[in-house]
Image 1: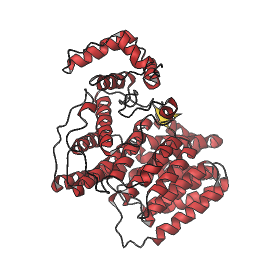
Image 2: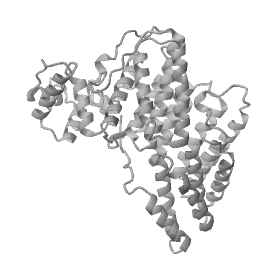
Image 3: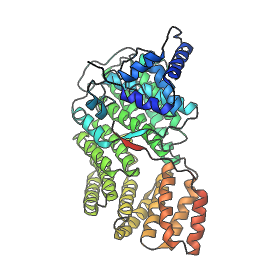
Image 4: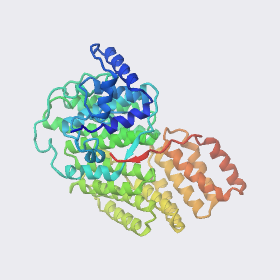
Length: 496
């Protein structure tokens, strides 16, 4: 019976432009440089990997992942090459769930370590990584629904895996961090570092600190490979989840969309393994926000169903309100005004019902009343593209958000100004729109957020109908001079 081909490796191999002989020589050279001079790969061996699905032994998969990562300019993991430990034999199943979701706890730590190592290598060598495929929301939800609703291993008291089990998955080109067991003081320091990174992201955007966050997450992945008491293990998983969400959000903020999605999936796994189902749901909601931004609201709604149902009954009202605002934004993108208004009404009710008697988790402290109004403004402004009468509500919420914004939330403030200016353009008020657009321009250059430029580009499109106005002519010239000339390409659709 003929073995099936490795279609994932074949597809990526076709993108590189290599011949089979050239790849064999590169593997031998890279392996020798990393302490494996005895390796002797040839053209026929490469052909078997691709055509018959033969899986090579380590260090070959790790070497291949590093070579493909460098060649393609984006993170390519062992799973991406079709060499996962739990590779499926059915081609149909493999096409739906080629990353083997969900991962067991030991696999989550290994994927985390491998992926961050590859990401750091790309960052270090100045490669960009925006050309990969983005997974469909339905593929993620279909693979993870039952798993997210089940009891996690740590919470259930299942013994954790000791030893550095991820060694054979760490990319050969990464700087190996020799992890060791840690105590409560070290974990407290890690938790404080998350707060510092989170504040920087809110103020300045994701570009400047992304590498630092990815590096910290890589170290935590190593720590998770050792045996710790359950209470420390749980906290380490929490740190990993928070850092992975930040790495994903910062990656999304600078246009590395497939990389961002991978981090959101890692964060969901880490949060769930730590027994924090609300955090897992919030991580998925970030992936949903990414989908709306990329013009895929149907995928966003798929992800939000899983985020809301998988968060568990312990979700605080304010957290549920936040989830509702994202769902409403997706509905607005599809022109579903009635559903959007109903969902936003539920979000408001949930927000005011939160009495504050239970302190919100650290990852929810940024969602305050200003953020609630900011998301409402964004939803109404998005709906106004389908129903211009929604523009007035967008203006009211954006103004209220600006009144309430605390210092240190510069990026959100810019978004508020852009929502307000866009709503004014749609409402046929170019004078006010010009004022608010210029307010956004004043501070947008102080952030490293590609998303702000993308929103500004959307607003620029709305100025076209007022191009004969002298003031708007001047604004368009300033926007044209300020906007980057080459917008970040949007990731294409695929299944996981």
